[in-house]
Amino acid sequence: MPARPLVVIEGGPGTIRSDVDASLAIARAAGWRVVRGWAAPLTGELVVCTGSVNSADEARRALLAAVSGAGLVVRAGASPDIVARFVDDLRRLGPVDHRVVDATTPRRLAAAERALLGLLGEGLTIRQAAATIGVSRRTADRRLASARRALGVTSTAAAIAAAISGGR
Image 1 (cartoon, rainbow, N blue to C red):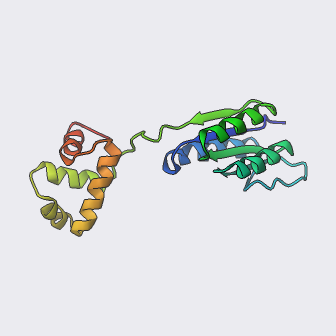
Image 2: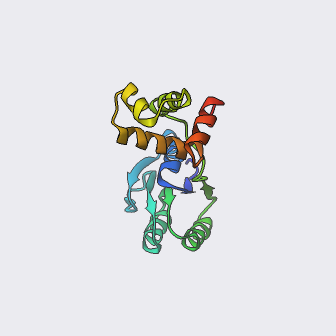
Image 3: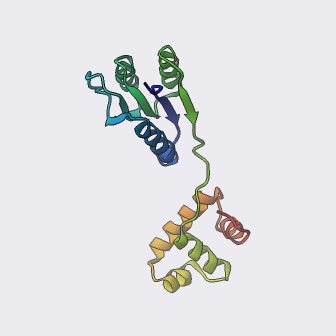
């Protein structure tokens, strides 16, 4: 019987998706059937329950699924004390893969964001750049804000500099 996955991943919703997906893919490859939520069927088959734990009640339901023999892949968004208690309880059942994904880890720039920053770097205004790439000023503003977040900077000048110097 393959080792039961007990995986708890903390971080922002967008930052942990790839970790959760990878953990679920590993479980599937090992023969585990993935079910959403904390209702583990009592059929004796290999089942991994997956979902979010954002409260003590959800942590309790996920723990009950694990006690019944299910594996877990959990997106933990509850307060740190609830998550710590939950992980400690899970450790009584077996080894726990507890990861904290840095919510500030920058993502790669989208092509549209890179294009906009390139035009701004050439000296165009945001309005001119928007017209050049065929989007509204509002869309250009949103792309610019998204690019600043992705690069982990607060100013447009810093975003342009990061993009020019080979930023993500």
